[in-house]
Amino acid sequence: MAGYLSKLEALLKTRQFVVCAELEPPQSANAEAIYRKMKYYRGVVDAINVTDSASAVVRMSSLAVSTMLVREGLEPVLQMTCRDRNRIALQGDILGAAGLGVRNVLCLTGDHQTLGDHPSAKGVFDLDACNFLRMVRRMRDDKRFFSGGEIKTEPRLFIGAGANPFAEPFEWRVRHLAKKIDAGAEFVQTQCIFDLERFDKYMEQIRAEGIHERVFIIAGISPAKSARPLEYMKEHVSGLMIPDALIARMKQAHDPQAEGIAVALEIIAHVRQTPGIRGVHLMPLKWASVIPTIVKEAGLLPRPVVDVTAHPVANA
Amino acid sequence: MSMSLLLRDVGYGICYNAERIAKVVLFRCSMCGQCILRSTGFVCPMRCPKQMRNGPCGGPTGGMCEVYRDRKCIWVRIYKRNRFFGQLPKTERRMTPLDWELWESAAWLNVVTKKITLSGESRRTKEEFQD
Ligand code: SF4
Image (cartoon, rainbow over all chains, first blue to last red; front, side, top):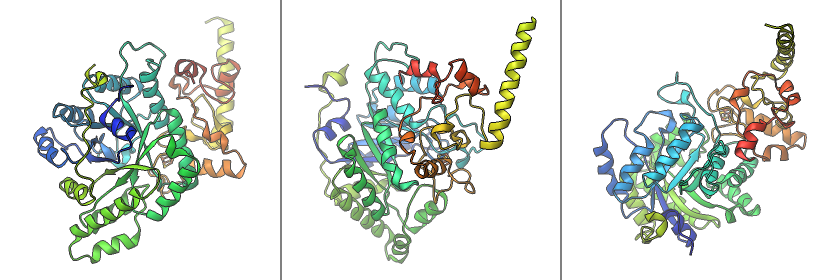
């Protein structure tokens, strides 16, 4: 049997419903903070996405934090954006990540630098996500650098992309995802889902085009502690759809935290019923401690055990 | 400098500036040297703040760009244009990555000298990247 590249790939290919969650690196050199947070993830999620200075706010590097997770026996999904690195740096980091034991990579274009805390920075955007995906896929499958030069030991990574059902032009989003799959994406993680109507329309189109048979789709869920972060996101974060009814519901709740959990559980239940969805990806809004509660309440515990380390590929 | 070299430089200058004047005025062109206006409904994608050549980022909200919120997202415009003219398949093919060495050169001449294809992609990058 062919080996699996990662635990995430093994679970998806053996038709398990996967659980991923996001870990935001600290805005400091404090590694202690990361080790402390690990308890929310260990045994609770299958893979941990490590963000790459998301929203263009400087944080500890995603590769460094991913390496810490690997050393602790956890499985990271290394997020990489094209905002800060050109094709030379990206390829170098891909090789380094594989060398350090990272097994999953999520290739993104990245948020624009003017939206973050260093608006005067120079944005790189040498490649876009489509070509980034193709580059990584080619490094792995064809053992070729972008330039065509040969790679002796290829980076064996499971390759993912982002997908946003909630940004315009809506009718085109599915075709855009198809382009990313053609370029090399094997799994996708969606933008956070709040608007189920729009999500259902998107998934209908996905199924009509048979896209769910070509890629593993993991649904993004963002539990919120109160109405505040939702209002903030609606105002300041682009490419999101947050229904006013949801904000009102959170505002009226006696116990907003419990309501936030209830909302997340409802969305998880909905996506689990949706044909074509193969897992969930939790992106709590400054609320990592809620992850175990949500996974447990959703009935997704215990997580299946796969021994990828026993595999020749992972040992190599 | 020999006479022929001088003539070549002057000739290049004329071509470059003619293209520049025409395209900058008409399409707010960035002179990327590898013009794909033909497949983007004559909306220059290099005006996108992320210089995306393969479709929109995840940002456009209400049709507006995530960076310049008072401007329409370039890719929403390209999409609408191509849909109107029945040219959507053109946007479905992945464009080869940019060849930044061609930046600020004359795309029309680059076609003639075979540096880029008719579709506006760098031949060198296509070869390297096997696109
Ligand atoms: S919203 Fe549109 S124009 Fe703005 S950065 Fe994204 S793709 Fe480019």
